[in-house]
Length: 133
Image (cartoon, rainbow, N blue to C red; front, side, top):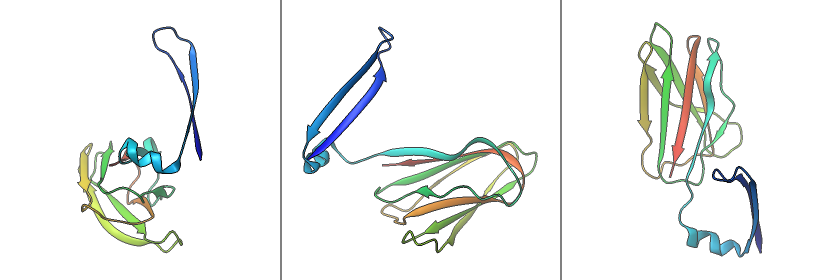
């Protein structure tokens, strides 16, 4: 058995709403495939050679990363992956983002690893945002 709970504010009344859902773990798949999104860095001032915290990447078929930066220079974002969750990091790709620019990268369909992290080669204010489906 599985119990899920939610707590949100109803925008029409401004009152908090809570509820419980009781079900079987197998019923989760009847709700559709999972999706996820999030950012190890959101409008964050980062230093040269700073590395983000690891960000979960397992369990999704399609993965995209969106990167923005506000520096007057091109900044390189080194994407590193940990296949097994053991702390053994490997460079996946280095993505160059133009001055005050934006780049997105679509990982190959079915690409699989446990964790991802990002390192910059120059100081900047950046957002690195992952979308999974």
